[in-house]
Length: 135
Image 1 (cartoon, rainbow, N blue to C red):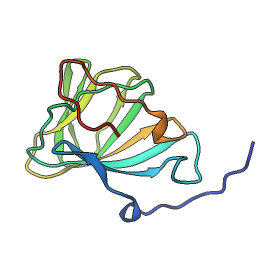
Image 2 (spheres, rainbow, N blue to C red):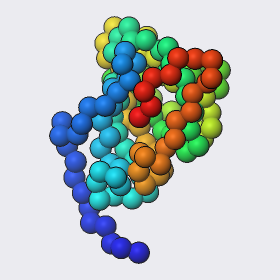
Image 3 (cartoon, rainbow, N blue to C red):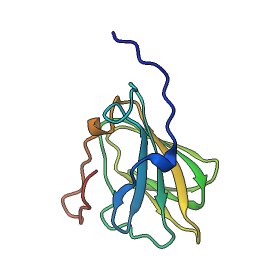
């Protein structure tokens, strides 16, 4: 196994990606972009009043969110729970989920997958819903 040295990334230097009117994100650590392995980490922002049409999705790897600002609701397999700054969320692999902003300010969160690269996460959307451009 090759040795990987530590790596430092500044969020402001990472490309902003996103789904129109739903969420924007920056992938900070991902083996396809950084010399890293086993963890993919990024930040996401959901604007106040952002649409949730097409936001519900699932993927095989489990995901963790850590909310850093704002307030909202996380939907996991049909159950809704409130989230605010300081909330950690575990989303099991294969669970249908999305987050919506219920506040008047931007909802910010960290997301983490236990995979080498963001490209290892294959998004699936319900056939009966509008689908955004997949990341």
